[in-house]
Amino acid sequence: MFVPKHVEDAAFKDTILQQNNLSHKEDPVLNIKFTKRTFEDSRHMVIEVSPNLRRELVALRKIKLYWSMCKVQDFVVVTRCLKCLGFGHTSRFCQNQQKCSRCAKDHRWKECGNQHPTRCSNFLKANTYIHDDSKKINTNHSVFSKECPRMRRIESIIMSKTDYSYPLIHAQINTDHCRAAMEHLSLYKIENKVDILFIQEQYCYNGEPCYIPSAYLAFYVSSSTSQSFPAY
Image (cartoon, rainbow, N blue to C red):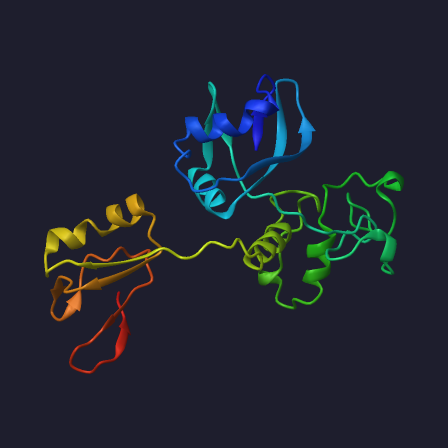
């Protein structure tokens, strides 16, 4: 997260909890791990938090810190090689060919005299396995770019395999076949931070449940067949 330079480390935890209404959280853990980068008026800090607090911070995306709004996101460490520019290993153990981070050819970037636009060596390699030219991937970006689709994919895989150790929140409600109650499902889910909703006696039209937001994955059980079906 990016923190204004004037904010002192000693008051960091209490200020975040109080200004963002997080003081009620049970045993909140918030420790400063290190400062990744320092700028003229701010610094990029990495903090370690408890699972319940991480859930709240990631949902907020931006938090109040004195008179500033600070962006918050997961800090993901991606192991990559500075020799072949691939992922999952370091240059110390790399047996692959040296790659240039500018033109993607077989030399160091300091030796590169190529004036062409920067190209991503990882997608150039991937394109060699794609025979249909219409499906080849755009390589016109730096291999170190945060927007590189390959980098973003690796980060998402790491996050999907990370155990953040917080349980899913579920709730069971009875809407009594009320249309208005079904229309307020989205608001109920957001306000109560519910992951899974079990709905009884929902409002139906032509035998199928209605007013379930399209973004939700929903299933319903037919009383006549006792089978579950996807709700569209």
